[in-house]
Image: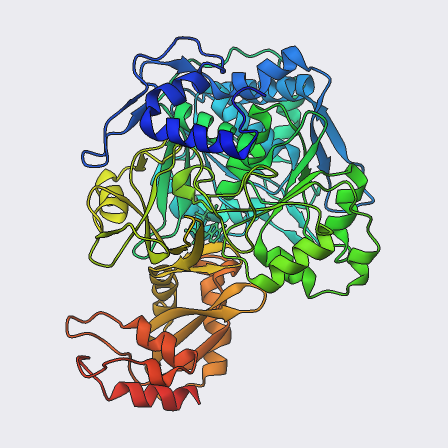
Length: 631
Ligand code: WTA
């Protein structure tokens, strides 16, 4: 495979070129893709002016590279093995040629709904093949996809639809999730009561459940797809035209719509997939993420297809019909490359060992993890029970904002160190800075993780709010991209990510902003104010705990927890539910009125000797009362 890193020496060499002659490095790789017109310049702009562009002047369509190239060269190679939620239902498979036809049909359906280049389309779907096909069709027609994970509430969906001014929503009647059914269309209907921008809804029939179709607005997707033509002329996109918007939580305010553009993202998704996983022509790759998150964008929808891989796409959950499902699927498709999240590993580790022992798993060659720091117990279990100590584990660190993997072992090429992401990929210049923003150059070191220079896959802006983009990522340490993560670096330069250093909590690999949850809790009629923190959790990594001041001092924590969780489920979605609620008479605040979550975290974890100086608080006496309430 052209330009794939094949050895440790080559990694060093590639990395060095990418730093010393960045334009040459990326230009060589860009040339391996299909372009309608070549670019004028490789990279322009910088972190100061926040005007970064890659391959400007170039014209292309990402789906030509993900589909047409392979439909031409390897038409009969399977692109997708789709495994349904219920193992008794028939699986579906598409070759590259078939997938291209499906995407073309979907693009024709979108065109029939009046969708044009640049329009935003929102997807609120479960992991059915049409989800992947629709997202690719959006890119093919030159529109912008904005996927919202199917676990978000009607309110959260409406906010995201309105923020990006989506014209069309694609959903399914209902989703199968294990033995549960999620009423996606009903939730969409509720959301759309507040969205005047949406002109049409395409609804896929999946369960056949009873739903309402609004005349003139809603259309059955299956029927339109059946009638659609299998040819479609892909739109000519500028390298910097937006490809997608994806919402993610930060430490303040509402979720932000990170906007990624076409050419740079394409290169990043493709090159990182190729180098990190080292998937061979006859290998079978499986990423268990949902397309609702960035991992499902870069390492289901784009990375594997850009490289012509065969992959498994799974509709269901790891524990249905039983906790052996992942391993049964690995055996069924002879999966060679398996990519999942630490939270899934821990959840399955906690189940009866027989589920793993019953599986063969001998097809596996490479294991991957993403989304949160992996603890050593989970790492060991993954390595021993799943990998049989025979598969390198790539611990891939990256973010929605980075578009693709930034720091990771390259499978079978660079060294694995348990619980370490290890070394930066070519093109990535990480650095650690202290709280004053000074770079720490010595090793070993610990500090705030920043990235020093533009890379092709970086998000270019927050949709509709470039100033917020600057504020959020480039103002803490001017001239550098601040990740929000802390990290350690060992004497050989290997990175270990320690977790968020801001007010973002990572629950089961999902980013939850404390401010968002507090806003939801504060809507509760019985609550004056609240503060949310993350505490360690055996399976989820972290879970949410809220300290709440009620209007009536006799309110019980348990009663409030139930009703607050109902409210959170409505405002955000079940993923943001609290593990615990503690009624307190007040919250520790600085003199400027900021809640000191650091103190709450120490109280919650019982580290009362590490509270630090509380005398500068506006209300130091409150700390003792909170400690009492905890007990
Ligand atoms: C965390 C997911 C430790 C980190 C791709 C980051 C990780 C946030 C790792 C981004 C890893 C992701 N080790 N922590 N291998 N991968 N994280 O945007 O805190 O959903 O900032 O992107 O997840 O989450 P996001």
